[in-house]
Image (tube, rainbow, N blue to C red; front, side):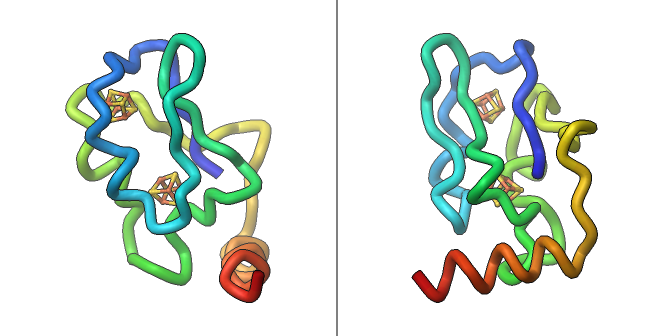
Length: 81
Ligand code: SF4
Ligand code: SF4
């Protein structure tokens, strides 16, 4: 999963781009629900939020490294629900 750092300027550009609805306004900055972020696997070749963020504040979450297979399994779980 990806994560949003405190450099986020709350511009709201990323939220509508997420195919999984994983991004929402948090208490102070935007946040990604790691249970819903597939790094866009299953939908796109590149993480869409990273593409649009004007301040590049959406890195990989080092605490939540996942293989492509794990991300695909998450995608299938989400879309089956
Ligand atoms: Fe959503 Fe894709 Fe960004 Fe994850 S990488 S938060 S699935 S847009
Ligand atoms: Fe924050 Fe970047 Fe999303 Fe804008 S696009 S709300 S700066 S994470």
